[in-house]
Length: 369
Image 1 (spheres, rainbow, N blue to C red):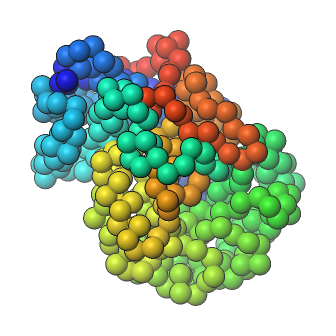
Image 2 (image 1 turned 90 degrees about the horizontal axis):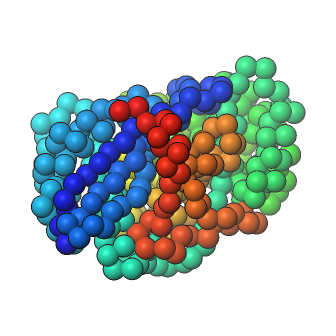
């Protein structure tokens, strides 16, 4: 069973307001749909990423570079396909975008293998559990947003069935952000998972000051606390100074970058993103590194992919999503058969491959190629 063709479709859906963190803005929900077809007529159905600036470039790379290299190869030689695509990274100026393109192809290939064998990707990777807790990303900075508004936001996530929230910090002083987190905890209650994410917004000193202010609030993890330029060493300082577990990995694009975090003693959890690090094939290498090191695995966004990965391994934690319908119309609507959420738990899709069915009408409306 061999790869005959690959179709990549860039999707861009305008949002009604800015969903930004401490170091970025989000005005559009973007993703890439990848349909890989075999010589026997089997077709993948998968989407990857939230590529606000590079979706069209990712599609170009797939069409002009990845597709010719992968065509004719067996769907059961995924490591060889990945190696052939990754070899082109030595020639690329923007390796991050190239790895995102490789991820689209790699995930489509895993979807096909699952469909060919009648197994979910979760089962192919180990099938450790069939359900996962799921948390929403939230706490965004918005003009005029009050502490009372934060409380209402947390209540909305509980009503949506979420087990918790990953809350944005790092855009204000440690003291002001601590007040926001305190408001979230009071509104959500003690049984609600609450993590914080600074998106590399602080120095180590500010991150330590903030962590000590929020330690009494039972924070699940402190994600990407420190500036990018020496993040591993700075996070190791933060980790030594606080009881709150430190998390990073979404900014890494290979398992080698994850190894750097592990070797530096910088993290307690790793949330490397399969859609940004070259797909399932590379993610499982990172997961193996973390398993041996005794670190837990999270996953940055992408619950349509992450549900299978995190449920497959014993050290997986929570799937992430955007429970606010205005933030992610892809998760809310385009993923037509999204598993139901109840009591903070997501049932992992049991169909073959990733088990994804997409809304064709939305794809036609928002494709930009």
